[in-house]
Amino acid sequence: MDKLAYFGRFFVKHKYIITLAAFIVIIGFLDENSWARRAGYDQEINNLKKEIAKYRAEYEESTEKLNELTANPEALERIAREKYLMKKPNEDIYVFDN
Image (cartoon, rainbow, N blue to C red; front, side):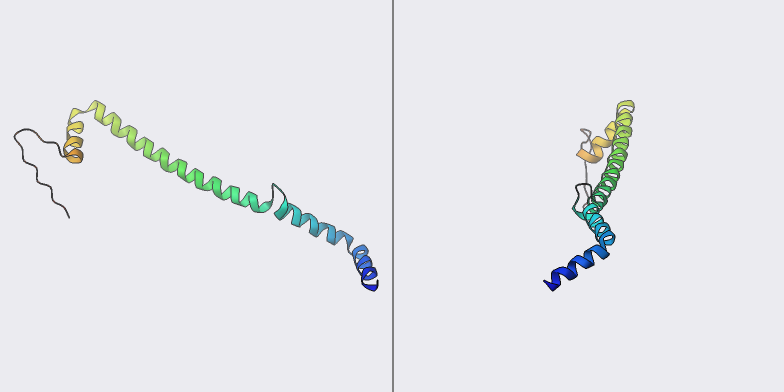
């Protein structure tokens, strides 16, 4: 019984600090919109923004190549020769592997 009375006096004496600590624990870690989850969401958003920037740059590069290929038949021939090893009927192709 003495421990229960001690706990009661301690709680009455420090009720505001205990309430504040409980509030911080609930808001900081246990709530659906907790600080820990928000930090994780912010990190995920930053990763997705980096990925968007990477894909945007890749898209712009591909668009430039497409525009070059549609406007310049020599570029189309160069790509066909380099990437697909195509050749003219009277040519020989030598491929060197490093």
